[in-house]
Image (cartoon, rainbow, N blue to C red; front, side):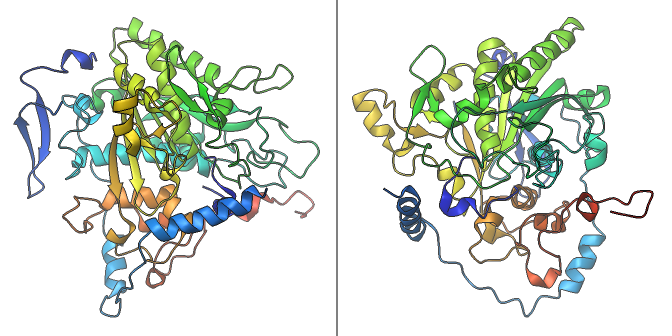
Length: 479
């Protein structure tokens, strides 16, 4: 995600449905207080830029971030906690959602499913989050590697290598991106002269559900996962300064995001076509293939940070290209992308968006710290405010303080980490409830690339890395 210099150095890794919409007898899934699942029938509610930025950020943080509170941990037996976690299965049983997949995918804007969070929806959100996390886990960000900026694994082995085969999807296409704007350190750069690509970076992938998973979820699902930033960014000065038009109306989006999505160059190997052209060509192929077989098809686009911004651009283009296709976006820690007209056009095209945000994370407040959707009341009077950034869709808001496993200190990297997000989703029941004791995800995953877990758990921070940092022993016994 294009972010600002003051914090970027810390962020290193990081219908047919419309046939049901507006009906008079629509089923919505609810959670009872006992956590039993019941079906209810009701109507849905329809000079020095860096210095200036650092000073602004400091002021903003003092205004908007709560002072961390200290906890008393002396009475907690963490040995018992760890033993209990070891005796808890890592995954919840997969539920058959084939009859209710449209509600789970946001056909009714997740009305009554977010607070309390329905367990079926929680499971799907975690699944998409793990697809987005894969774009970090498989990314080669080692500046001493000639493959810096690429994916470490062949697409046929990606899910096997990362333990994601359990979800029942296969990767069909890798996506590569470049940019024409001046941001020399945003893309991973190798110290070596000869590297796999001087201009492009691996940016994500397209995957499709297999027969078994398609039966469980009630349709053939195409998933696009976009990667966020993994190295320091120095192009925040470009952010918020320029909005570019998209589509044929008044919609406008941030210049840097659009550049990454649409840039291409004939002299490059991996970006003779843009990321936009690559992903749309593959989605078109898959949609046509499965529809010819008489299957119902949906498109879910996910991403974290910058990846969440690219997901919205992807959804906008897909909705214009495939009218009637169920399209939804599940994003994590994503920034604002466009103006009010962009939001409204996405809504009119039927794109359903669920934004998962952490209260303490500053990235979802960018860009548009001041000029944002809070000015909507002025738009109602003066007409479309083309220069005002706004978020899109429904929001699931999480709080770091809700988890007994997370530190309370100020930690920009930890607040923004996708693994922190997934931990909080897995433990969230409702805003009125405590962190659920039977949360299934392994808590040690939180410390993959940050230091967010309390010391009592004894989980090393930033523990995730390639074995021996990629060094191997040759036949002569040398590294």
